[in-house]
Image 1 (cartoon, chains in turn purple, green):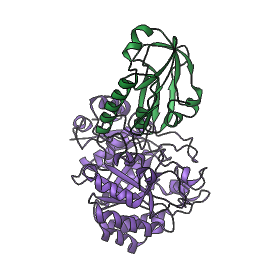
Image 2 (image 1 turned 30 degrees about the vertical axis):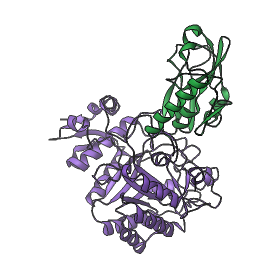
Image 3 (image 1 turned 60 degrees about the vertical axis):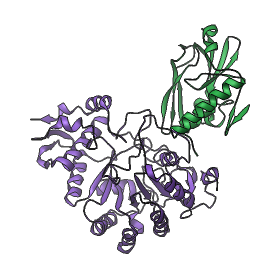
Image 4 (image 1 turned 120 degrees about the horizontal axis):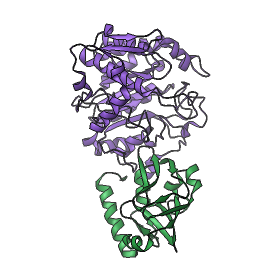
Length: 362
Length: 148
Protein backbone atom coordinates (compact mmCIF):
# COMPACT_ATOMS: atom_id res chain seq x y z
CA UNK A 1 0.00 0.00 0.00
CA UNK A 2 1.31 3.42 -0.87
CA UNK A 3 1.31 6.38 1.48
CA UNK A 4 -1.35 8.09 -0.65
CA UNK A 5 -3.63 5.09 -0.50
CA UNK A 6 -3.13 4.85 3.24
CA UNK A 7 -4.01 8.47 3.92
CA UNK A 8 -7.52 9.40 2.93
CA UNK A 9 -10.29 11.66 4.10
CA UNK A 10 -13.08 9.47 2.70
CA UNK A 11 -14.72 6.74 4.73
CA UNK A 12 -16.15 4.40 2.05
CA UNK A 13 -16.61 1.57 4.55
CA UNK A 14 -13.13 2.17 5.93
CA UNK A 15 -14.01 1.76 9.57
CA UNK A 16 -12.30 0.62 12.75
CA UNK A 17 -10.60 -1.67 13.58
CA UNK A 18 -9.13 -1.91 10.06
CA UNK A 19 -8.93 1.87 9.78
CA UNK A 20 -8.39 4.65 12.30
CA UNK A 21 -8.14 8.39 12.18
CA UNK A 22 -4.95 10.09 13.37
CA UNK A 23 -4.38 13.72 14.26
CA UNK A 24 -2.80 16.02 11.69
CA UNK A 25 0.24 16.44 13.97
CA UNK A 26 0.57 12.66 14.29
CA UNK A 27 0.51 12.17 10.54
CA UNK A 28 3.24 14.82 10.25
CA UNK A 29 5.36 13.13 12.93
CA UNK A 30 5.06 9.81 11.10
CA UNK A 31 5.91 11.52 7.80
CA UNK A 32 2.58 10.40 6.33
CA UNK A 33 1.70 14.02 5.60
CA UNK A 34 3.98 16.97 4.83
CA UNK A 35 3.89 19.86 7.26
CA UNK A 36 5.62 21.76 10.02
CA UNK A 37 4.84 23.68 13.17
CA UNK A 38 5.20 27.45 13.52
CA UNK A 39 7.70 27.00 16.32
CA UNK A 40 10.49 24.48 16.17
CA UNK A 41 10.07 21.70 18.73
CA UNK A 42 10.17 17.94 18.87
CA UNK A 43 6.87 16.13 18.72
CA UNK A 44 6.11 12.47 19.23
CA UNK A 45 2.65 12.19 20.82
CA UNK A 46 0.48 10.12 18.51
CA UNK A 47 -3.30 10.51 18.83
CA UNK A 48 -5.59 7.92 17.32
CA UNK A 49 -9.37 8.11 16.96
CA UNK A 50 -11.80 5.29 16.20
CA UNK A 51 -13.75 5.73 12.99
CA UNK A 52 -17.31 4.67 12.13
CA UNK A 53 -19.66 5.56 9.31
CA UNK A 54 -22.26 6.87 11.73
CA UNK A 55 -19.63 8.41 13.98
CA UNK A 56 -19.92 9.08 17.66
CA UNK A 57 -23.34 8.44 19.16
CA UNK A 58 -22.93 11.15 21.77
CA UNK A 59 -23.95 14.71 21.06
CA UNK A 60 -21.86 16.98 23.27
CA UNK A 61 -22.43 20.66 22.60
CA UNK A 62 -18.75 21.59 22.26
CA UNK A 63 -17.49 18.62 20.27
CA UNK A 64 -16.70 18.52 16.57
CA UNK A 65 -17.88 14.92 16.36
CA UNK A 66 -21.32 15.57 17.89
CA UNK A 67 -24.17 13.76 16.13
CA UNK A 68 -26.19 16.89 15.45
CA UNK A 69 -23.28 19.02 14.27
CA UNK A 70 -23.94 19.72 10.56
CA UNK A 71 -22.11 17.65 7.94
CA UNK A 72 -21.24 14.03 7.32
CA UNK A 73 -19.07 12.38 9.93
CA UNK A 74 -16.27 11.96 7.41
CA UNK A 75 -16.18 15.70 6.83
CA UNK A 76 -16.21 16.70 10.47
CA UNK A 77 -13.18 18.20 12.11
CA UNK A 78 -12.20 17.32 15.65
CA UNK A 79 -10.36 19.91 17.73
CA UNK A 80 -10.68 22.14 14.66
CA UNK A 81 -8.46 20.14 12.33
CA UNK A 82 -8.91 17.24 9.93
CA UNK A 83 -8.00 13.79 11.13
CA UNK A 84 -6.72 11.73 8.18
CA UNK A 85 -8.09 8.21 7.87
CA UNK A 86 -5.38 5.56 7.73
CA UNK A 87 -5.08 1.82 7.33
CA UNK A 88 -4.37 0.47 10.82
CA UNK A 89 -1.70 -2.06 9.83
CA UNK A 90 0.12 0.49 7.68
CA UNK A 91 -0.08 3.02 10.50
CA UNK A 92 1.35 0.55 13.03
CA UNK A 93 4.24 -0.19 10.68
CA UNK A 94 4.86 3.55 10.38
CA UNK A 95 5.07 3.82 14.16
CA UNK A 96 7.60 0.98 14.21
CA UNK A 97 9.66 2.84 11.60
CA UNK A 98 9.58 6.12 13.55
CA UNK A 99 9.53 4.74 17.08
CA UNK A 100 12.77 6.49 18.07
CA UNK A 101 10.93 9.83 18.15
CA UNK A 102 7.61 8.65 19.60
CA UNK A 103 6.84 9.72 23.17
CA UNK A 104 3.27 8.61 23.89
CA UNK A 105 0.41 6.92 22.03
CA UNK A 106 -3.27 7.42 22.82
CA UNK A 107 -6.36 5.83 21.36
CA UNK A 108 -9.53 7.92 21.76
CA UNK A 109 -12.68 5.85 21.81
CA UNK A 110 -15.99 7.29 20.68
CA UNK A 111 -19.41 6.32 22.01
CA UNK A 112 -20.31 3.43 19.72
CA UNK A 113 -21.43 -0.16 20.16
CA UNK A 114 -18.25 -1.55 18.60
CA UNK A 115 -15.87 0.77 20.37
CA UNK A 116 -14.72 -1.65 23.07
CA UNK A 117 -13.94 -4.61 20.84
CA UNK A 118 -12.25 -2.44 18.23
CA UNK A 119 -10.19 -0.60 20.84
CA UNK A 120 -9.09 -3.94 22.21
CA UNK A 121 -8.09 -5.24 18.77
CA UNK A 122 -6.24 -2.05 17.80
CA UNK A 123 -4.46 -1.90 21.15
CA UNK A 124 -3.37 -5.51 20.74
CA UNK A 125 -1.99 -4.80 17.27
CA UNK A 126 -0.04 -1.82 18.56
CA UNK A 127 1.44 -3.34 21.71
CA UNK A 128 2.62 -6.39 19.79
CA UNK A 129 4.91 -4.20 17.69
CA UNK A 130 5.46 -0.86 19.43
CA UNK A 131 6.97 -0.32 22.89
CA UNK A 132 6.05 3.37 23.28
CA UNK A 133 3.67 3.76 26.26
CA UNK A 134 0.01 3.64 25.32
CA UNK A 135 -2.95 5.41 26.93
CA UNK A 136 -6.65 5.06 26.24
CA UNK A 137 -9.10 7.93 26.36
CA UNK A 138 -12.13 5.84 27.13
CA UNK A 139 -15.87 6.11 26.48
CA UNK A 140 -17.52 5.18 29.81
CA UNK A 141 -20.97 4.32 28.39
CA UNK A 142 -19.60 1.26 26.57
CA UNK A 143 -17.39 -0.07 29.38
CA UNK A 144 -17.47 -2.14 32.56
CA UNK A 145 -14.94 -3.68 34.96
CA UNK A 146 -14.20 -6.71 32.79
CA UNK A 147 -13.55 -4.60 29.70
CA UNK A 148 -11.34 -2.16 31.59
CA UNK A 149 -9.38 -5.05 33.03
CA UNK A 150 -8.82 -6.42 29.52
CA UNK A 151 -7.08 -3.15 28.55
CA UNK A 152 -4.93 -3.28 31.65
CA UNK A 153 -3.96 -6.86 30.87
CA UNK A 154 -2.90 -5.85 27.36
CA UNK A 155 -0.42 -3.33 28.78
CA UNK A 156 -2.27 -0.01 28.56
CA UNK A 157 -0.45 2.00 31.21
CA UNK A 158 -2.73 5.04 31.62
CA UNK A 159 -6.44 5.71 31.34
CA UNK A 160 -8.03 9.04 30.51
CA UNK A 161 -11.67 10.00 30.92
CA UNK A 162 -13.10 13.01 29.12
CA UNK A 163 -15.38 14.27 31.86
CA UNK A 164 -14.88 17.77 30.40
CA UNK A 165 -17.72 19.47 32.31
CA UNK A 166 -16.68 19.63 35.96
CA UNK A 167 -20.10 19.82 37.61
CA UNK A 168 -23.08 17.54 37.29
CA UNK A 169 -25.26 20.46 36.24
CA UNK A 170 -22.96 21.41 33.37
CA UNK A 171 -22.50 17.79 32.38
CA UNK A 172 -26.26 17.49 31.95
CA UNK A 173 -26.50 20.83 30.20
CA UNK A 174 -23.85 20.09 27.56
CA UNK A 175 -23.82 16.29 27.32
CA UNK A 176 -27.07 14.76 28.58
CA UNK A 177 -30.07 17.02 28.08
CA UNK A 178 -29.14 17.72 24.46
CA UNK A 179 -30.74 16.57 21.16
CA UNK A 180 -29.22 13.08 21.10
CA UNK A 181 -27.51 12.93 24.45
CA UNK A 182 -27.81 10.21 27.03
CA UNK A 183 -24.55 10.28 28.94
CA UNK A 184 -24.76 9.84 32.69
CA UNK A 185 -22.64 11.68 35.26
CA UNK A 186 -22.88 8.71 37.64
CA UNK A 187 -21.72 6.31 34.94
CA UNK A 188 -18.66 8.45 34.27
CA UNK A 189 -17.72 8.46 37.94
CA UNK A 190 -18.32 4.71 38.28
CA UNK A 191 -15.86 4.13 35.43
CA UNK A 192 -13.38 6.64 36.86
CA UNK A 193 -13.44 4.85 40.20
CA UNK A 194 -13.15 1.41 38.60
CA UNK A 195 -10.19 2.62 36.54
CA UNK A 196 -8.52 4.01 39.65
CA UNK A 197 -9.01 0.65 41.33
CA UNK A 198 -7.53 -1.33 38.44
CA UNK A 199 -4.67 0.97 37.41
CA UNK A 200 -3.71 2.29 40.83
CA UNK A 201 -2.52 5.73 41.94
CA UNK A 202 -1.55 8.42 39.42
CA UNK A 203 -2.41 6.26 36.41
CA UNK A 204 -5.83 7.73 35.70
CA UNK A 205 -6.46 11.23 34.37
CA UNK A 206 -9.64 13.22 34.00
CA UNK A 207 -10.00 15.83 31.28
CA UNK A 208 -11.39 19.05 32.71
CA UNK A 209 -12.29 21.84 30.30
CA UNK A 210 -12.09 25.48 31.37
CA UNK A 211 -14.77 27.58 29.70
CA UNK A 212 -17.93 25.47 29.72
CA UNK A 213 -19.72 27.73 32.20
CA UNK A 214 -18.10 26.52 35.42
CA UNK A 215 -16.76 28.79 38.14
CA UNK A 216 -13.15 28.91 39.30
CA UNK A 217 -14.36 27.37 42.54
CA UNK A 218 -15.90 24.43 40.66
CA UNK A 219 -12.52 23.76 39.06
CA UNK A 220 -10.54 24.06 42.28
CA UNK A 221 -13.03 21.77 44.04
CA UNK A 222 -12.62 19.02 41.47
CA UNK A 223 -8.82 19.38 41.46
CA UNK A 224 -8.68 18.73 45.22
CA UNK A 225 -11.17 15.88 44.92
CA UNK A 226 -9.13 14.18 42.18
CA UNK A 227 -5.73 14.73 43.80
CA UNK A 228 -7.22 13.33 47.00
CA UNK A 229 -7.93 10.14 45.05
CA UNK A 230 -4.48 10.15 43.40
CA UNK A 231 -6.01 10.90 40.03
CA UNK A 232 -4.62 13.57 37.71
CA UNK A 233 -6.86 16.35 36.43
CA UNK A 234 -5.68 17.35 32.95
CA UNK A 235 -6.50 20.90 31.97
CA UNK A 236 -7.97 21.95 28.62
CA UNK A 237 -8.96 25.39 27.41
CA UNK A 238 -12.32 25.43 25.62
CA UNK A 239 -11.78 26.20 21.95
CA UNK A 240 -15.01 26.70 19.99
CA UNK A 241 -15.52 24.18 17.20
CA UNK A 242 -17.15 25.94 14.23
CA UNK A 243 -20.80 24.91 13.65
CA UNK A 244 -21.01 23.02 16.92
CA UNK A 245 -23.80 24.10 19.27
CA UNK A 246 -21.22 26.04 21.29
CA UNK A 247 -19.43 27.34 18.21
CA UNK A 248 -20.25 30.94 19.11
CA UNK A 249 -19.03 30.70 22.71
CA UNK A 250 -15.88 32.54 23.68
CA UNK A 251 -12.66 30.92 24.83
CA UNK A 252 -12.06 31.38 28.56
CA UNK A 253 -10.52 34.73 29.26
CA UNK A 254 -6.71 34.40 29.16
CA UNK A 255 -6.08 35.90 32.62
CA UNK A 256 -8.43 33.40 34.17
CA UNK A 257 -6.86 30.53 32.24
CA UNK A 258 -3.31 31.43 33.33
CA UNK A 259 -4.30 31.73 36.98
CA UNK A 260 -6.04 28.35 36.88
CA UNK A 261 -2.95 26.80 35.28
CA UNK A 262 -0.71 28.20 38.00
CA UNK A 263 -2.95 27.32 40.93
CA UNK A 264 -3.52 23.79 39.67
CA UNK A 265 0.24 23.40 39.43
CA UNK A 266 0.71 24.74 42.98
CA UNK A 267 -1.83 22.25 44.31
CA UNK A 268 -0.26 19.36 42.43
CA UNK A 269 3.41 20.08 43.02
CA UNK A 270 3.61 22.41 46.03
CA UNK A 271 0.82 21.27 48.30
CA UNK A 272 -1.08 24.57 48.15
CA UNK A 273 -3.78 24.47 50.82
CA UNK A 274 -7.42 25.07 49.96
CA UNK A 275 -7.71 27.89 52.51
CA UNK A 276 -5.06 29.89 50.66
CA UNK A 277 -7.35 30.39 47.67
CA UNK A 278 -10.06 33.04 48.13
CA UNK A 279 -13.26 33.29 46.10
CA UNK A 280 -15.95 35.94 45.73
CA UNK A 281 -19.70 35.31 45.88
CA UNK A 282 -19.83 34.01 42.31
CA UNK A 283 -16.91 31.64 42.66
CA UNK A 284 -14.16 33.74 41.08
CA UNK A 285 -10.65 33.53 42.48
CA UNK A 286 -9.94 36.86 44.13
CA UNK A 287 -6.96 36.05 46.32
CA UNK A 288 -4.04 33.69 46.52
CA UNK A 289 -1.62 33.18 49.36
CA UNK A 290 1.42 31.07 48.63
CA UNK A 291 3.40 30.92 51.86
CA UNK A 292 6.80 29.24 51.61
CA UNK A 293 6.46 28.90 47.85
CA UNK A 294 8.98 30.63 45.58
CA UNK A 295 6.45 31.73 42.98
CA UNK A 296 8.95 33.49 40.73
CA UNK A 297 11.03 30.35 40.43
CA UNK A 298 7.97 28.29 39.62
CA UNK A 299 6.62 30.68 37.00
CA UNK A 300 10.02 31.02 35.37
CA UNK A 301 10.88 27.32 35.45
CA UNK A 302 12.74 26.48 32.27
CA UNK A 303 12.18 22.79 32.65
CA UNK A 304 9.57 20.12 32.77
CA UNK A 305 8.05 21.69 35.88
CA UNK A 306 6.63 24.72 34.07
CA UNK A 307 2.97 25.24 35.07
CA UNK A 308 2.17 26.39 31.55
CA UNK A 309 3.12 23.28 29.62
CA UNK A 310 0.47 20.98 28.18
CA UNK A 311 -1.06 18.51 30.61
CA UNK A 312 -0.66 15.06 29.18
CA UNK A 313 0.40 11.48 29.75
CA UNK A 314 4.16 11.01 30.22
CA UNK A 315 6.85 9.50 28.05
CA UNK A 316 9.19 6.84 29.41
CA UNK A 317 11.31 9.51 31.11
CA UNK A 318 8.31 10.93 32.98
CA UNK A 319 8.12 14.10 30.87
CA UNK A 320 4.90 15.07 29.11
CA UNK A 321 4.67 12.80 26.08
CA UNK A 322 1.27 13.89 24.77
CA UNK A 323 1.66 17.58 23.99
CA UNK A 324 -1.17 18.26 21.46
CA UNK A 325 0.32 21.35 19.75
CA UNK A 326 -2.31 23.92 18.73
CA UNK A 327 -5.06 21.76 20.24
CA UNK A 328 -6.62 24.53 22.32
CA UNK A 329 -5.78 27.57 20.21
CA UNK A 330 -5.08 28.51 16.62
CA UNK A 331 -1.54 28.99 15.32
CA UNK A 332 -2.29 32.72 15.08
CA UNK A 333 -3.07 32.88 18.81
CA UNK A 334 -0.72 32.79 21.78
CA UNK A 335 -0.03 29.34 23.15
CA UNK A 336 -2.55 28.48 25.85
CA UNK A 337 -0.56 25.44 26.91
CA UNK A 338 2.95 24.93 25.65
CA UNK A 339 4.05 21.75 23.87
CA UNK A 340 7.60 22.71 24.87
CA UNK A 341 9.18 24.59 27.78
CA UNK A 342 8.20 28.26 27.48
CA UNK A 343 11.08 30.56 26.56
CA UNK A 344 11.91 33.93 28.10
CA UNK A 345 9.69 35.87 25.67
CA UNK A 346 6.83 33.50 26.38
CA UNK A 347 7.23 34.04 30.11
CA UNK A 348 7.03 37.81 29.72
CA UNK A 349 3.77 37.28 27.82
CA UNK A 350 2.47 34.82 30.42
CA UNK A 351 3.13 37.24 33.29
CA UNK A 352 1.29 40.02 31.45
CA UNK A 353 -1.64 37.71 30.78
CA UNK A 354 -1.83 36.32 34.31
CA UNK A 355 -1.82 39.63 36.23
CA UNK A 356 -0.92 37.70 39.34
CA UNK A 357 -0.24 40.85 41.36
CA UNK A 358 -4.01 41.53 41.38
CA UNK A 359 -4.75 38.47 43.49
CA UNK A 360 -1.48 37.66 45.26
CA UNK A 361 -1.53 38.33 49.02
CA UNK A 362 1.33 38.15 51.50
CA UNK B 1 6.51 22.47 -16.39
CA UNK B 2 9.32 20.31 -15.03
CA UNK B 3 8.56 17.47 -12.68
CA UNK B 4 11.04 17.18 -9.83
CA UNK B 5 10.22 14.32 -7.52
CA UNK B 6 6.43 14.72 -7.19
CA UNK B 7 6.42 18.49 -7.70
CA UNK B 8 5.47 20.23 -10.95
CA UNK B 9 7.66 23.33 -11.28
CA UNK B 10 6.80 26.15 -13.63
CA UNK B 11 10.09 27.20 -15.21
CA UNK B 12 8.66 30.29 -16.87
CA UNK B 13 8.48 32.12 -13.55
CA UNK B 14 11.08 33.75 -11.33
CA UNK B 15 11.59 32.39 -7.80
CA UNK B 16 12.63 34.08 -4.57
CA UNK B 17 14.97 31.82 -2.59
CA UNK B 18 13.92 33.22 0.82
CA UNK B 19 10.14 33.27 0.59
CA UNK B 20 9.80 30.44 -1.95
CA UNK B 21 7.33 32.62 -3.83
CA UNK B 22 7.11 32.58 -7.61
CA UNK B 23 6.91 35.79 -9.62
CA UNK B 24 5.05 35.84 -12.92
CA UNK B 25 6.53 38.93 -14.54
CA UNK B 26 4.45 40.90 -17.03
CA UNK B 27 6.10 44.20 -17.90
CA UNK B 28 6.15 46.37 -14.81
CA UNK B 29 3.59 44.19 -13.06
CA UNK B 30 3.87 40.77 -11.44
CA UNK B 31 1.57 38.10 -10.14
CA UNK B 32 2.81 36.40 -6.95
CA UNK B 33 2.19 32.91 -5.60
CA UNK B 34 3.64 30.18 -3.45
CA UNK B 35 5.93 27.38 -4.64
CA UNK B 36 4.50 23.85 -4.50
CA UNK B 37 7.12 22.86 -1.94
CA UNK B 38 6.40 25.56 0.61
CA UNK B 39 2.63 25.28 0.26
CA UNK B 40 2.79 21.55 0.89
CA UNK B 41 5.07 21.79 3.90
CA UNK B 42 3.00 24.56 5.46
CA UNK B 43 0.04 22.18 5.65
CA UNK B 44 -3.59 22.71 4.83
CA UNK B 45 -4.34 26.44 4.77
CA UNK B 46 -7.31 27.68 6.78
CA UNK B 47 -6.97 31.48 6.54
CA UNK B 48 -5.19 34.12 4.51
CA UNK B 49 -5.20 37.81 5.36
CA UNK B 50 -3.84 40.51 3.04
CA UNK B 51 -2.86 43.98 4.21
CA UNK B 52 -5.04 45.49 1.50
CA UNK B 53 -5.07 47.06 -1.92
CA UNK B 54 -2.63 49.90 -2.61
CA UNK B 55 -0.33 48.71 0.18
CA UNK B 56 3.28 49.44 -0.70
CA UNK B 57 5.73 46.74 0.34
CA UNK B 58 9.48 46.42 0.12
CA UNK B 59 11.14 43.17 -0.89
CA UNK B 60 11.21 40.90 2.18
CA UNK B 61 8.43 42.79 3.97
CA UNK B 62 5.07 41.29 4.81
CA UNK B 63 1.97 41.95 2.72
CA UNK B 64 -0.22 39.65 4.79
CA UNK B 65 -0.37 36.48 6.87
CA UNK B 66 -1.25 32.91 6.25
CA UNK B 67 -2.52 30.32 8.68
CA UNK B 68 -2.45 26.56 8.26
CA UNK B 69 -3.67 23.92 10.70
CA UNK B 70 -0.39 23.87 12.62
CA UNK B 71 1.53 26.74 11.14
CA UNK B 72 1.28 30.49 10.77
CA UNK B 73 3.58 32.88 9.02
CA UNK B 74 3.93 36.19 7.20
CA UNK B 75 3.61 36.55 3.44
CA UNK B 76 6.89 38.25 2.57
CA UNK B 77 7.09 40.02 -0.76
CA UNK B 78 9.66 38.56 -3.16
CA UNK B 79 9.90 41.97 -4.89
CA UNK B 80 8.99 45.54 -3.92
CA UNK B 81 5.76 46.97 -5.24
CA UNK B 82 2.26 48.24 -4.68
CA UNK B 83 -0.57 45.74 -4.31
CA UNK B 84 -2.91 46.29 -7.26
CA UNK B 85 -5.04 43.15 -7.02
CA UNK B 86 -5.84 40.59 -4.36
CA UNK B 87 -7.05 37.11 -5.17
CA UNK B 88 -10.41 37.12 -3.43
CA UNK B 89 -10.93 33.45 -4.23
CA UNK B 90 -8.07 32.40 -1.93
CA UNK B 91 -9.45 34.61 0.81
CA UNK B 92 -12.72 32.69 0.57
CA UNK B 93 -11.04 29.32 0.08
CA UNK B 94 -7.40 29.30 1.25
CA UNK B 95 -7.03 25.64 0.30
CA UNK B 96 -6.77 26.77 -3.33
CA UNK B 97 -3.14 27.61 -2.50
CA UNK B 98 -2.64 23.94 -1.67
CA UNK B 99 -4.57 22.49 -4.56
CA UNK B 100 -3.57 24.86 -7.39
CA UNK B 101 -0.53 26.92 -6.35
CA UNK B 102 0.26 28.16 -9.87
CA UNK B 103 -3.33 28.62 -10.96
CA UNK B 104 -6.32 29.66 -8.85
CA UNK B 105 -4.10 29.74 -5.76
CA UNK B 106 -2.12 32.86 -6.74
CA UNK B 107 -2.01 35.54 -4.04
CA UNK B 108 -1.63 39.15 -5.22
CA UNK B 109 -0.56 41.28 -8.15
CA UNK B 110 2.05 43.99 -7.61
CA UNK B 111 3.04 47.07 -9.58
CA UNK B 112 6.80 46.83 -9.25
CA UNK B 113 8.73 49.74 -7.76
CA UNK B 114 12.29 48.43 -7.93
CA UNK B 115 12.22 46.02 -10.82
CA UNK B 116 15.62 46.64 -12.38
CA UNK B 117 17.50 46.05 -9.17
CA UNK B 118 15.45 43.18 -7.76
CA UNK B 119 14.49 40.93 -10.65
CA UNK B 120 18.13 39.91 -11.25
CA UNK B 121 18.26 38.70 -7.62
CA UNK B 122 15.57 36.11 -8.30
CA UNK B 123 16.22 32.61 -9.59
CA UNK B 124 15.38 32.19 -13.26
CA UNK B 125 16.12 29.82 -16.13
CA UNK B 126 15.62 26.08 -16.44
CA UNK B 127 18.94 24.93 -15.02
CA UNK B 128 19.06 27.39 -12.13
CA UNK B 129 15.47 26.70 -11.08
CA UNK B 130 15.93 22.92 -11.19
CA UNK B 131 19.20 23.07 -9.30
CA UNK B 132 17.80 25.42 -6.64
CA UNK B 133 14.61 23.41 -6.21
CA UNK B 134 16.47 20.10 -5.81
CA UNK B 135 18.68 21.60 -3.16
CA UNK B 136 15.68 23.06 -1.30
CA UNK B 137 13.87 19.74 -1.53
CA UNK B 138 16.81 18.03 0.16
CA UNK B 139 16.84 20.68 2.92
CA UNK B 140 13.12 20.29 3.58
CA UNK B 141 13.45 16.49 3.63
CA UNK B 142 16.30 16.68 6.13
CA UNK B 143 14.13 18.83 8.39
CA UNK B 144 11.46 16.13 8.35
CA UNK B 145 8.82 18.31 6.76
CA UNK B 146 8.01 16.13 3.77
CA UNK B 147 5.93 12.99 3.71
CA UNK B 148 7.86 9.84 2.82
